[in-house]
Length: 395
Ligand SMILES: [Zn+2]
Image (cartoon, rainbow, N blue to C red):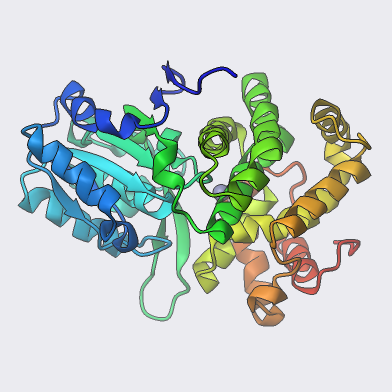
């Protein structure tokens, strides 16, 4: 077998391989960082991997501190508090360490370290990103500890705007090219402790990124090539990683599949993410789990526009029945093997806010990448189908 160790310069500098977390201090030094703020979540902050990383930096002469006041689905307030910690400690770089929430918060903290405007002025709308003072963006080293978000190779963060009195919280995408971490370390040893249900849900998020990118209608053949191989890696390795958390080869390949999914979705996402962002904001549910549940309903709804490329994908994946039906059967079987629920009702989401879900999903930025432009009413119906488990429901 080929040894799973490599250095890639696409889409950024990626150090791939077991044990490569040991290169963190050199990575900081390569970026000219002498006082990194390690941003992670409270769960990870209590684990040895974070204290080990932080003390390795200190032993190498770096002034490293840990900031971990980050919630799942991080908020604008979390970012503000992180920026205060960054300034108070005299930091000059960020180590983004953890799952999607920690990575997204860390990237936003690095962006905001030297800005005068509020965070929401950099929402990914029009050319808002040109308002950023680029000299004020701190350098970032990213170290994912889950295989799903792929945020380590992305130029954006999803941050929840908790809104003013009475308004619903809404997830906003903050974008700037300099939010792409300059160095990424993919070390499978950091993911072996992940519980199997989180491994499953995050792995399905990686699948949804590649799948939605592949199905989005924009012209980006490079992204499509990455997406299909990313999907093959999920097919080969996700169940292995879920069934044996210490399967290092599977853990390594899922980290790579995750980075590939996020690289591919420069081409666009779609209806799974439009609804998942909405439900994440309204119910605080797990992002990967939402995408996993929504996946077959959105595929079925989009069938007319995506059937040809799904058949091509099914052939590449070497499915026994390389048809649209065969692909759907594969998705449903894998989901069930991974103990992912079939309906949103199974995770206690009901139809009471269906209208609002439809309205928010239709204007979510990811909706622009769906192969069919659905109205708010159609998104509402698609959501209801997923609550009820109605795969054949029309929109
Ligand atoms: Zn996602």
